[in-house]
Image 1 (cartoon, rainbow, N blue to C red):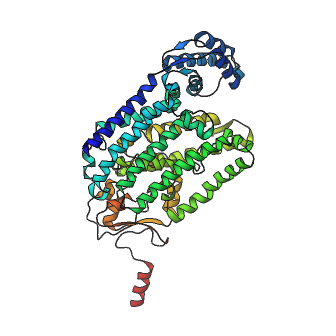
Image 2: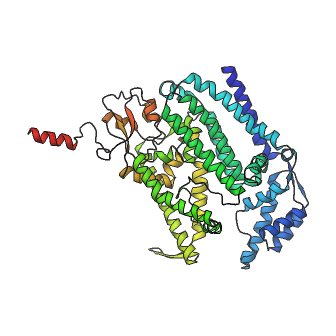
Image 3: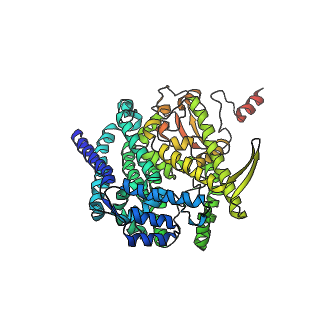
Length: 533
């Protein structure tokens, strides 16, 4: 088994090294014909940018993406600065400079990677998948279930914030930084998934298709690990299958196939406010322009948020979404499972959690209200008066701030990148506005609870250790109190790791859901005592 693991680890490292090295491979040459077509397609009216590009970039060879992108961004920023100072707003080139540069780089790159896409897919994705499975399978097969054989988790450098954990942290953060802020550096990564993108949507891949495919690949490999590790627990098997299915089918395949049929890309399971740009002008205009299908999507999105979400939470708790449907939760429950014990269980962090996650939720609602106001009124800014004076709030500025701070940094860089340091539910605990919405409903109006039997609890602490949401489950179990915390996603691992069967996930009647421990007296007991007296 150890030899097999070593082979798997070697293959994975080889694939990872090749994957990273692709950033530095290949050359770039933007031809005049390609540039002229790009200018036409984008409707660029800036002579300054066009002339500067033809002088510094067009028909010149670059040996790496860094110098190539630097020249383009330099020309773009210089031209925009001049046009803005002269109030020539029609000539300003709007949008993210890195995304703009990515499109040019994608059409200008050439070399061994672009000419051998399938070969490099196998040398990166293929070796990564094969190596991961060879390494994972012997570990979880011999390790048994989490309930009995996870004691070494604090001795493993990958799961106890050791050097492997820090390396995983650095890689994940680096990947998200490149994906969000420098996609022009990862053109070769996108090239190797072009054939798959073309087969699904009919279009060449973008950095977001690369991310979606990588996301699904990682979830699939780690789902195999979950199946083996929790093979004696039907609940874990079913929910792993569910989150995998919804991610692969609803978040990846269906949206790509919709594009092939010239329909808007849409993830039908992604509810607002997690889908924070659903009410943005560009999205509403695209849906309206799509006719009946677009109207259906618009109605479905609103109905999902206002009706389906609260009704399902009432009957099944937030677990129906966070642990069975959500793509963020799917990655957390598969890739993030080895890190679940790293979540902080302190009261201090719990207080921060409540303020931060509900603050993000309020921010999302306020931004959406401002967005809808400007959409229907046609006004692009709103007057705001407070104790500090009068301010003009621009909708685009608020949207950009939310997209950068929450959509990119919090959800991506921190939300996933920090798995190896702070556990697998950093985003779900502290940043997800939909989790805050679901949690409010679950806390005050739901039939879901985790019941406890204090008399059976031996205070081993397994339940608290493996609670990914930072809940001190043992404290509730020792007192025999039901767990109805708004943060609980009902993953059920606490019940799985309990050696005495103290914990049980239930959807019962609302009456008696919030218990106060073994001294709780029900209405029936009060009535019986009254009759005796």
